[in-house]
Length: 427
Image 1: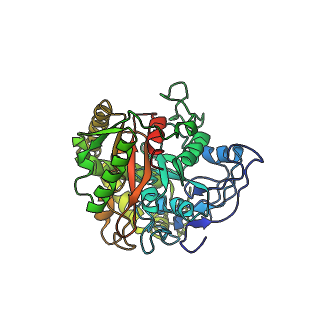
Image 2 (image 1 turned 180 degrees about the horizontal axis):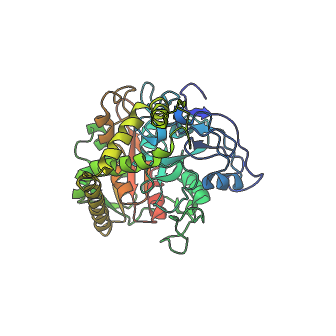
Image 3 (image 1 turned 90 degrees about the horizontal axis):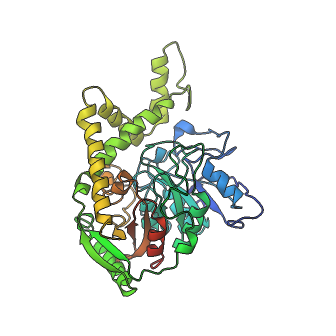
């Protein structure tokens, strides 16, 4: 369990005696609040912080009979694509030695891939469930925004993030989604079942029936991708075609600007959300010798890692007077364009398909010296969060070196049943 550093805490939380997940273990990402068990967000800032309440998804897991075996390692405050920015050390990919497991939910995907948990919960702000699922050869679902309560999730970028399942198979991921989905009076962004397009019965959608399914392939999401990743992707599509699906090319011109729009919005929201970690309200004390500003600065200097500091600074800059319209407003305009493009493409297809990640799992340490490389690796996942749509990553095959490759399927809002049905034809 400790060989690949997948867990930060290993205290067991017992669920109810019976329920749909009785006898199953579901690990929980360490940015999701667990009453009485440390929740650190992978940060020294929250080392030793014990929440006095359960997140809604944790309460639902316990009611469903699941046992929580521990809190999984993650990029600090969810900021990263490799799970190397954690204050508790990097996570090793258990199925690809010397490689990263993806991020920021790398610990959750790793414990599932290693067989140390039956399933896990992650959170996805710009691909943080789908990326590690792809890199670790498992299944990950990023739900439609509003399908799953965020109450108890330590916020990074409120308008983008969702909690979702990671599991060995699509049917198991669908089972877990069924347990955690649904409206919550403590989260005003959740939607009622009567408003949702297809309801909450996800598990029985994993029937593998893709006969007549129309798949749109946005060529923009294949441009620049690793050659073997692209080959594996087309082989998986051919497999779906052999089972009765059809595919055709579609255009998503706006995705060219999605990564920069995503990072401006995410960093801006992060700078606002992380202001509470000042050593007074939350976080480690910076000491007090009569100057509150110095105390505040010391707390954040010592408590935050380099990547978090970088994103907070950039986000604060983007929101500052004189630059708000130049950066943040433009990013929101680009977001609207991305959403419009997805809606148009999905009017011509049941689902859209792309490689989940444009590259196989990177070697550990490779992207730490070049943050831009890490940011650009999110090119295929971030547009989905901007558009608030559901997406699933399923194993598509391997490269010649045996490195996992994921296939991403994107559906219309609250079209989880459609992407689960499509994904279950492969996994």
